[in-house]
Image (cartoon, rainbow, N blue to C red; front, side):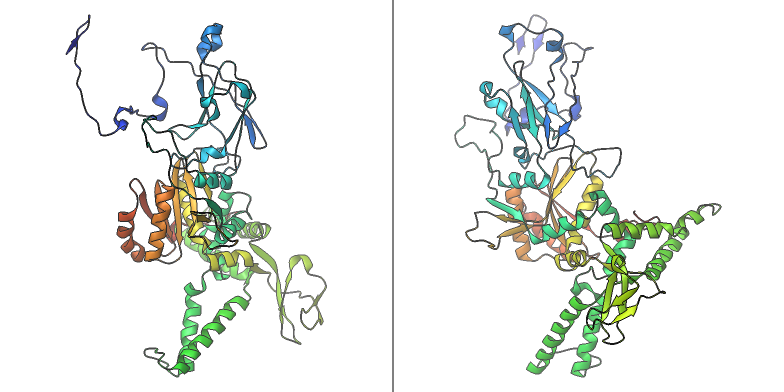
Length: 528
């Protein structure tokens, strides 16, 4: 016990497990304020500035007590911190009147992608060279009385993640003088976009914004149309699978019962039919007529009105307006997700020709026999799916990643950005086009939380995939390892979840997002 002039003071000696025990806990991020009395708060100084391309000058914010009266020369030494709330140039906010800001994760040194430039290089000390990430995720830089212009260059999302994934050095240790204090983590030496990542970016960049892309690709009506146009992995095409089984039964002479391939001849028949069906998938011309699109829309309209009846039926005519469908089709044609035109068959050589709306004339010419026929005067417009988008969905499984990113973007309040699928090398590749030891589907930051995303078109994880995910989690150390599965039945992944959770590093949470068709928007007012 100690005694002061006003009373007794109790002192207790306690032993803590780590230095984290001395870090104070606050109720809210904005509740920490300087006070010199119980009734007076510090006056906060705020200023704003605008971008010039990807570069922004740091406002010269001066503390209130120095702004009111400049201190003497002998008392001007030292720095104060300027907290920066930086708007994102590539805004992914789904609200038109709100703009997202940069909130950086604490577990990945994305802040190293921000370049800090000061006009007076001569007075720079160690503290002036760094950008600090606050607990809330915003950036903060030092400033002083004699400091002149300071500017920050903002990176694009892909470069920010690339630099963060290659940054071995992390933070200064709490005990700076302790020998062997940890300052870094093993990351990766070389990072590049994978084929899947390039396909994903190319699909999303066909739209004006990411929310616009999500509103179309995650719309229940348009998703059904894309799947109908072939945007589904061939192995998940139920109709094609049943057709192959029927063909094999006919070839083997077994209309019912169990299919067995015991002889070499039967195995050769299986291989021949599998190859033929593979070519059939690639050659098949896919289009949908306008009347088919209208029937699908009318069916959805009836279901919508049955589930959401109006008291007097006065709103029904508004929802029944066909312009909702026409405007949305035009929107997808403008984004080149659909192509408008006509398919016609030559009567001489029976070749099926496709002609776009831009090239239709009074006379049509066959692409094979070069014979000319008059242009048709009746019939519907035909709409073909963009072959690149169909291939990205069917062969590269980008829909699972899009679904996971869409779900994460719905959670974001102030910040959301991501990097698509990337190849990661622990050492520099010795040869060009070397196979990477690891590939991740996506990295996303949601309000400062880092997510490592894995998209799965099938409901299962094998041991090799678990090993790669654990390896990525150990080096990247995300807040959450997220698996987005496009199968409604996720019993296969859930069975492996316990094994995967037990092998994840400490502090990394695990989450599975199951595909649920009911979360997709199914309203007759289609996007566009």
